Image 1: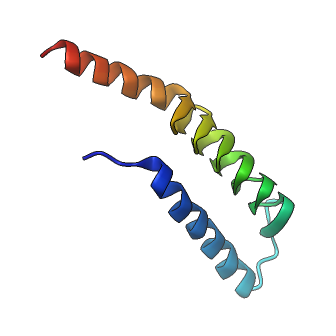
Image 2: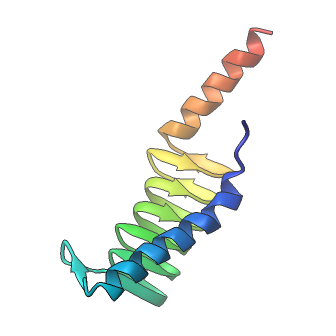
Length: 112
């Protein structure tokens, strides 16, 4: 089964925003010292969404955090066109996951 991670990144961003909306509606304003929901041009929060977002779960064009989704994403779990992190998935992905996938596919084609 082949997954197109670029298509999934939009769904992940919507999922993160849904989680933030649920936490906000229930009255949770901060988690571990971070604002739960921060959205805007420059967003910083637990669930941050914006053009330039920084947080634990961040979604945006330029996002940095533990779980990042965006065009340029940097984090432990990064999904984006340009992704950097230990488990990075994208067209230009740098990370342990991307390296392992490349090695596995190379070994599979060399066995043929």
